[in-house]
Image (cartoon, rainbow, N blue to C red; front, side, top):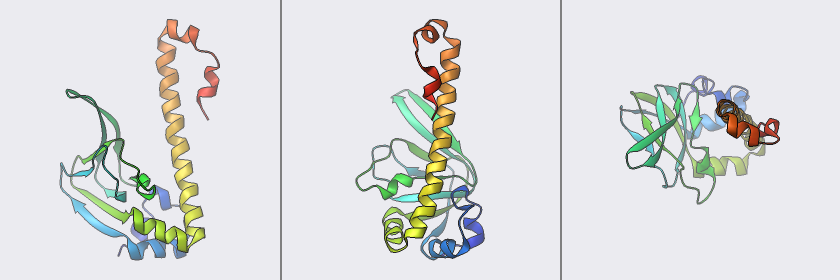
Length: 166
């Protein structure tokens, strides 16, 4: 069981009413992971939603056997692993604790059950997941626009560049 106050520290649940957080709190677990703990492995099934209370997690994608790209450093308040609610989905990244981390976890299967039993909970959570996804996509689009802006030859060949952002 997790405290409602801890769930309120997670960006995904900041706008959620207490009665819905109470449902989640009864099913979620609080865990502490050491530096170097791999929470998610690329191409493997994601089993849980991870919500970071304290610490930092690197989200990494390997480009070649010698080159890894850090896609993000997940900070306190952030969550990852939402694909755990998609049956058959596998991870597109590896997530590794960069320091000791305090993490709330909720299994994807349990989350699906909660959603099926409480449509309000499903709606509120998925609405916030959508907001989070849009924010990430806007950030990625801005990064692409900045990169294209630095490449004069490429910039001249790209049409409708303003439509890269949602």
